[in-house]
Length: 270
Length: 213
Image 1 (spheres, rainbow over the protein chains, first blue to last red):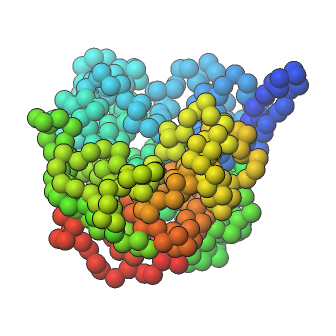
Image 2: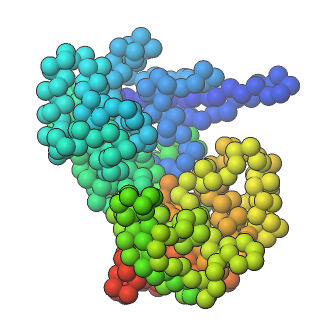
Image 3: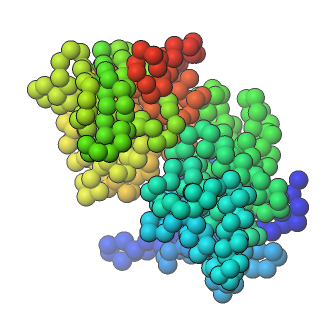
């Protein structure tokens, strides 16, 4: 299933330092020895409740943690450590983020210009950027008319596709999608996820962060379940079936059974 | 009965209609799901039902009287993003007190812990905040509650937990509940029936759904 490993995270721990009013320093662990890897052509979903550390993981990979964060462990991209220098070079080129909110779109840029700008930032020249934008639009089924619109004129589903176009126009080696589907209606969710699947099938590995486990399972190869900053289990999507008896950790089973299409029960001592 | 008839709405006299002849009937004790594609005016309709917006034409009648006659509005609404509905400078205890003594009682039923009361909204998770928002809305003793995708941003476990509390409360207090959402399995679980956005009589979809737990 997974080809050659592109991203591997080894025993990553992240702690936030907080200075109390009297000068004492408290350390709040948010990630505890997290290990995972994503290979070519694979979608790895990261699921868990809010506050479990999913977004912190994405920020750690992209080097976007705040200054009071202490990081231990290693992040390897194509076998080499992701240092600050290297990150600055490859962020937006080889490493792309599909952000959580459509409010990330520049309200003053027409969609086609936003995508061309992303292409320029990935290192393409002006003409090449235009060509790449047109190709990406064709690939994602975006009309020329959509390119002429400002963000406020785009529907939720279209705005998502523009964000996806921006993330993929520079042909990145890894895509991190942070909650790409909330607030979309069913069809738009399916469409967004199918597009991610298409990108993965074309070889790009994708880290899909979401709390919507039902939507993730439709496209992901494997699912990593987060609980309180730890990965309690990484299971194949196919193991989330029936009553979840194929799942090893009780939390994964509870999460699965809590879905309205399953038992809709929430028996977890939170 | 919460009744809306021929509701039309637009933002200005020349703007296109956001809602063009929409209606609904919700009985007390009934949970109704409202499902329609994004951008078709679900939230606008909800705001009209709850009195946040005046319809440009048509009417909303609650138990045969205007909804805000003497006291709190009898149709309360819970929004999708609780973090945007609570004053960021209020501690939780004050946010609850704003809605009266009853809101504190509701908070206890909804599983709000004592320790949260002294915190500010940004120090709670979305799931915790949504309970506060529900307690505030229910604290006004509404006859009807409109919930606009109340658990769309929550994980499955938190979602199931909030619904367990909420369904118990609306049943005990005979509150009519309108749930707006995209999640078909969820609507099927919690609603007696699901409708689309349209004239109430024609748009109604009375197909059999599983009984809510």
